[in-house]
Image (cartoon, rainbow, N blue to C red; front, side, top):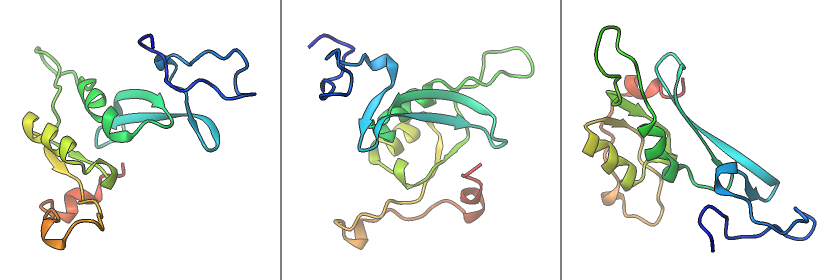
Length: 140
């Protein structure tokens, strides 16, 4: 299949042309029809720092690294823009090992609660290391 095309062609009555949708259109199928997701990284004052639009059926975790890579905060004086925040507060959807590893590799503190995973024993649960005060402001 050519690069840049989705693997599922539209069903009958859902785009009569029969062509697959290019990836850069960020349209995905779900039970409710076509949809998109907006992945946004913002600062503590809810100002947008990076934005990525993906298909609605795409997961949140795969878009995390590319959204984080888009962060550019200009400095007040001379110098290149900041690309690494001090901490990343997020909800349980972002508690995967891959995301935590990515943040650790870049030296960024993860303020993410552990995911509730019924298939794991309680001894395997990650300890909560962040303070409640820092986690309280994650929904800015």
